[in-house]
Image (cartoon, rainbow, N blue to C red; front, side):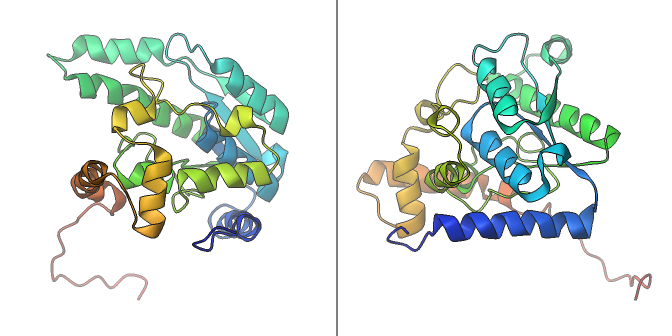
Length: 250
């Protein structure tokens, strides 16, 4: 147990039960379908679903963008968990969209791939009686390091209230090796690590989130600014409410 009360055994058991309850209420007999990148989040999310539902109800979707240098880790995870999977290359689809855009920004180009990937996962899921697993964690969400309607989408999210360090701990509790939990985090899109892009480490961010303590005040300003700028991603889409009554199902 950590100083702030994180009990990995308790939380792992609780989230496994939560997944089971979700499927009882929102898809009894359905399958959990998720993109497999080989990173810690998709690895731990897949392992949790296998623990909760059994390997026969978990299906992985590997989605290289033309080529993917570390795709062997994704294959290894699927073999380790003994889950079925498919490989769908998104390269042609992404390039076709980019060619038709008029002067897209660099960030626009970067975000096309995760949005195509999520559309692909939903296509697979809908074709096999599935529910899509969101694999985001609290640390990334806190600073907006996710693509809205891309990797930030899904039908249920087992990891979104756990920090990076906590996700790693859950993975180890489930028997995942360092190959899956300690792989250098990267979006696989721009050629940089997550921490290079963010300007601070996840360990530093996680401590700040859980304890409120951070030594580097410049990093605190950066984290706070990112949180404020991206907070809308964590909220439901605002919808105008009128005063016209709804009488159905009353």
